Each structure stands twice: as structure tokens, then as C-alpha cells.
Picture 1 (cartoon, one colour):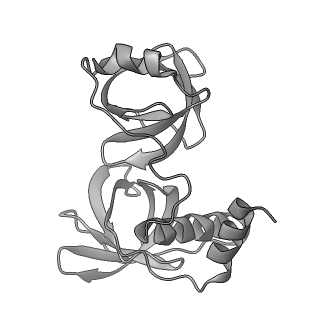
Picture 2 (picture 1 turned 90 degrees about the vertical axis):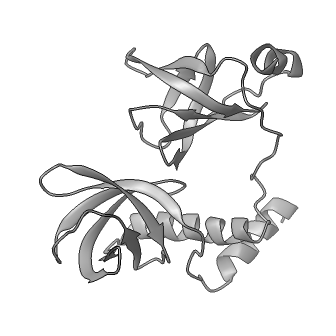
Length: 199
């Protein structure tokens, strides 16, 4: 077993703890209205949504959370500043969420293998665009960029794993941010290519 596999095995073997960090995201109510939220104390079974939007108990909602992506949930009891939600995931979807939560817990300890592999820089010109697989183009703002990827602010929210173009660079969506997505480049940039963007 190589070092990466051993590290992953040790992550999976440990009991799953609640994620302490606050995640940002948005959720959609049954009436299709969307609202921003901050998510605290997330576990495999539920979380607390901090949001000014009130919601009755027992409503099915769909949330898009940074680092975790799309999650289906049910609203539960109200709390100060928001409400609790419960997850009723089963099978592969529950397994994927558990793996992602374990990754986040490990990331809090500074032990993430993939976290911040390269230094990120603010681009000299943040204006760019993304091109979706079907050819649709959307303007975006590049928040930061590195040899391996970029964080962008964009009005659309592609699914995790979506392949797209950021300008002329091929990448895929790997995480959600508060107001955009994180992209990992298919082929890391050369330092000379990066210098063209960061000045």
C-alpha cells in the first residue's frame, strides 16, 4: 500500500466527526426560490443552516454547498438565525457524502493531500469566461489562480465533475465556493503560462 492509500485508509478508519468549519452555499425551497446560507455542524445525518429565510418543518430542499456539492435534505426544527436539516441519503450517495466529510475533517487538521498544492495568485485581469460542454459561454471573474487550478466567481453553478474551458484552459469543477466554483486544470500550467495571467 503506497503512502497516499495508507493516508486514505487511516482517514476512512477513524470515526466520523462533525465538520467544525462553516460552509457557504445556497438552497432551493419547493417553490423553486433560492436562498443563501451558512452551514454549521454538518454530519452524515444533518446540519444547521444559518439563513434569514424561514422554512417550515418537513420541507424537501436541495442545497448546493461549497466543498460538498448538491445535497438533498429535509427541513427540521428552527434554531436562532435559521433551522436544522436532516439528510436521508442511502447507498452510494451516503457513502460519497461520508467520504467528502472525512476529507473536510482531515483538511481542518492540515492533513489534506490535495489541499493547496500550488501557491495561488490574484490575476492581473480577473475578467474571463467559461465555456460549457454544450458550447454555452458565461462571463466570470477569476478570484485566484495557480498552476493547478483557479477559483472563479460566476452566476451559473455547474455540477461537480463538469469539464469546461476557463478562457482557453481545460479544467473540471471540483468544489463549490460561496459565489462560484473551484476548477482544477486537466493539464497543470507551466510557470511561464501562469506569469501571463498574474503579472
